[in-house]
Image 1 (spheres, rainbow, N blue to C red):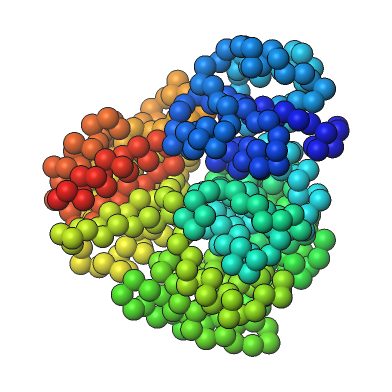
Image 2: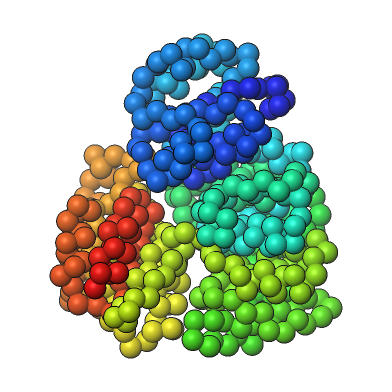
Length: 452
């Protein structure tokens, strides 16, 4: 395998994925020629094209592909794509073809890598670490699984001493990384289509933890057994690093932060939820260990705006509230709905949820039903299949899931009808939630609620 620097062309198969697009932006920013394919044109692919990256949406072998020379072209693909004529062409013509995770791993080999893993919380935590690095003006680049509101991207280049990466457990991708620092936020069961059971996914996280060379640079949420010495972090309970004395003042949360040797009072930010204070706690712990002054960190925490589709909230003149979130696991939905209930206990909540994957819907059906029942009304969209086929999951449908939900006011809808159904509902708070293409409702809803 040649050094990445020797390649002049980088072709991305599935360039519209959040992790793939960050890599594409990295090589584009490095002055390389970047092009690629994706099945669908989205806001993200449109932004990539506006930045000068050439993208096609048809599986055709055209002149842009045939003109590439295998000696100076690296092809990068995502395991979510199983069969594609373009990918077959590159393999048959003996181009260097690597998984996204392998390429990201090669980049992390040459930096002090801060890798954030976990079945929940990794996007917020890695984005917050990147934001704190930026505000402290550390020489770093970041590869994130969400669009940071502060710098409007999932990639930022401010130097190459450090890299901040979201370590994805899907397909065991995170085992390709070379983390010098690491965080493990959670090890709940997920991706059972890959791991099979909870014990196997926990073993995967233990293998990831074993990659970190220094016990003092591995931070694990207290209560998780990871099979080696490490530092712990927590909220409202003692740990190596912990936060407590949480106070709410309107939409702002204050908390105190404790290191093994000192207490720093009165951090203030606008990101809701105890789980997010937990994410902040470990981000502060890492930056403190990198030598960043707490006054800089206080200012940085205060101006952190979060991540697109992570509790993105709008309050309208008529008093109604719209919240959009990427949650697609019962634990995540419970966290979002729990935050809404904490801040607005008396308000009437309408949830619009799009399940993501037949396998995940099947594996966590009871958990989904319980979390979705904690609202006044539910519109349940059809399951977003992503890489899966309905024919392989007979009987696993949104109608099947809806029967398990204990609400009186509940219905199934397809995506195209959902907006009109929403407009007919009586609610104080609207929550759209899911990881598929439910985000296409966001702009129409904002426009409609602005007018009303």
